[in-house]
Image 1: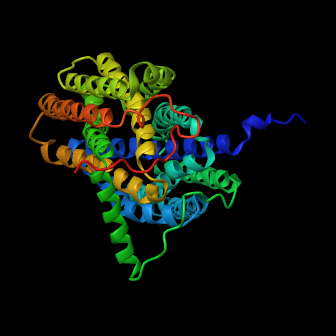
Image 2: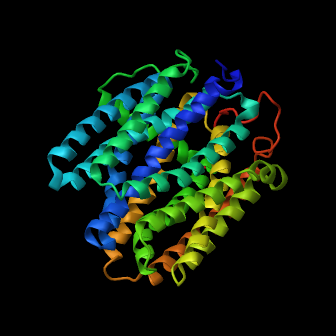
Image 3: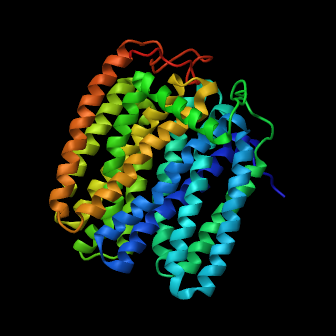
Length: 432
């Protein structure tokens, strides 16, 4: 029997596969929930409500995710959460069969609970990259990870579009099966590889107090590091636009007389365009620098989003979504690499948890905006107004980022010595 080349079965490649399965499942849930809500009610406001509801438990669980990532091996966090999600999926499948008339509610509850576990492995997965990937290869690894993440935008809507034709039970069964694959992959990773620096010594007091203390520490780290603070605010602006696209897309597709399957095709094409764009990301960063790439992609996303409101053709709508996703993929390479450079390794878990909490806070805000304004403000007005506000904010933030990065040119050079490049560096001194 022919064996696979060793380079295809290294821990790094299994790690890539693990992240691919996780992102596919997460994107599948995010695609399905707003569509199912709009399909069941025909109301844009319900799409917004579901979009907001799926992110609330995720956000509430993020502080615990940072605490766990700083105190336990990343693999153990994966094992526990994947096992919990598999069990939840099995239980939800049974309930969806038994309570057929309430199957939609079962899918919603399952997705909300699974989302809590998704945030636990998100922080652990980010930290695991620093454990398995050599520092000199980190920016290339982040490009690969961004490509994988964008690839899930290609694959998940295809799966989701097909599942929409089958009903709630297959949806739950397929998602639970993907969680099972993630469990097997996490079990295949090397054990005992905790390298996150000295483990924090548990302080006196209850676990709740320690959790609150760690959450406050993470937020303070974000606030006191100028570059990190700026890219977090920029990401929040972009995520508000992304959340509005996710929540409003079913209504936009319906406006053009297209089905949910056509919407899945739009997302798939957008994912393909984003993947192709990512192949140029490392070269663009080397030539134009982190700031040039980040600023260009942010401005492009703002302009394209504004154009989504008044557009009247389905294919033009699809093209604009593809350009937006392409810009988002390149922007994510920049922010991930910068984040690894400015956050100290011993503070990485709690800081990334705070970063994720702040970044994702914009998604339920977008859902809430749709829930409140969906009945009264037409999308042709709501989208351009929100886009103009986001674009103005991004312009100010990119100007500030230029000033902060100019103060530390060596840290943000696109080419660094091999032993220093892209490792989690000591935190940049605060300007505050």
